[in-house]
Image (cartoon, rainbow, N blue to C red):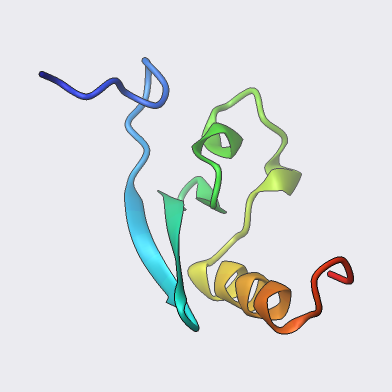
Length: 72
């Protein structure tokens, strides 16, 4: 059985990024940007929903993991 694509017109590269004990799926590339939501990478989504680099996304995920729940 062939997996259903995330968006029929495009393939979204994915990788896993570990932050502490949690592992997050990360989608995107240097050309389109990065996100934890593959829907953020379709052309109809504003560029403000994407991170420019993996380092920037990693920094955001670290900050979210270090804050107390409800304060991020």
